[in-house]
Image: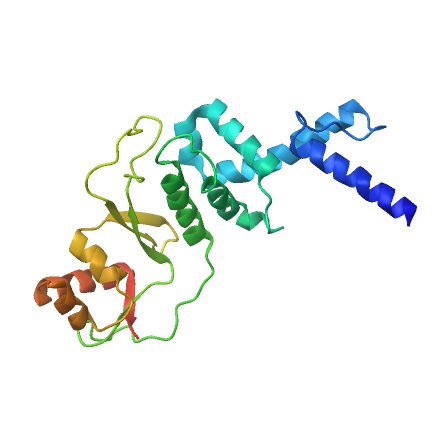
Length: 234
């Protein structure tokens, strides 16, 4: 029992050191060269996963701020998942509890996370009628399409564009994966956003509730069906 407790404490000591070597000393008896290899290997794995999920944020923040943020996440966030595929979601959760590096950072992270989720998704659409009447039936959004609203123009932010003040109007976006498995986005007019954001009701009922023209609304819905964004009616 004593040996198990000793081993456990050694493992915790090593883990604390690998996560935050500036604050936690390494366990005794481990060669410095090996510790350096472990530190670089573990941090590199996390940083690589995040860099692949948030390439725009990395570019916008610059190398110094990016690595400082990733190191703080690595050292202080207590992830509840062992799955590498969920690290990006954990990073978005982490950003909600810190003082952000830039005011648009959390929304940009969410936008990039949605893009990655749609690209990797293996979800399947529920039973539906592909040729259903989009006015009398209930339009059904593809399982790889999302209707999103942000304060910041997240689709424009990058190394060369980093606004300090949010625009007066929100950024309304449709993000979807097309038949070629490419994730695309389109800006939405307010009426189109509200129409797609409603999750229940026939196409006609939604348009009437929003005060939109039936012919204009039907043309929008049919266009989205041609793109595969709306898959039919349920």
